[in-house]
Length: 105
Image (tube, rainbow, N blue to C red; front, side, top):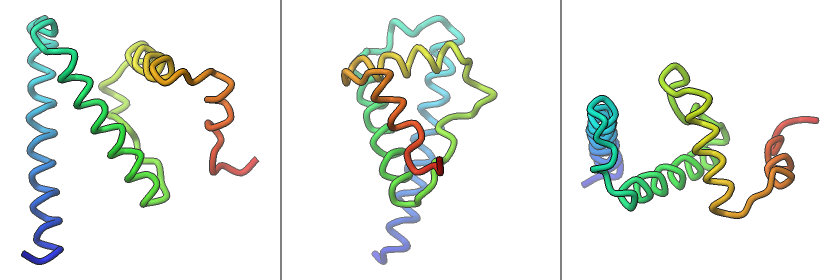
């Protein structure tokens, strides 16, 4: 299989997986069934997506939108970001130093 065919297959598989995950998450949220989803599964998905986002941003030199801004609330973002920072013991001071990384002063 050529590299372009392999990349195309990977892109197609990833697209299908993300669509399926979005539909499953929407269903769980709509039905109030979030307790049925194992925390370890959410952790696995979040870890994979964070690593992929960071690798893509580094490789492409841009920071694509991490989510659809019209489908996520500020409260949801702050809740997730706060827990991500807490999990890795990153202080707000540390965050402030990284926040402007790559931006002109």
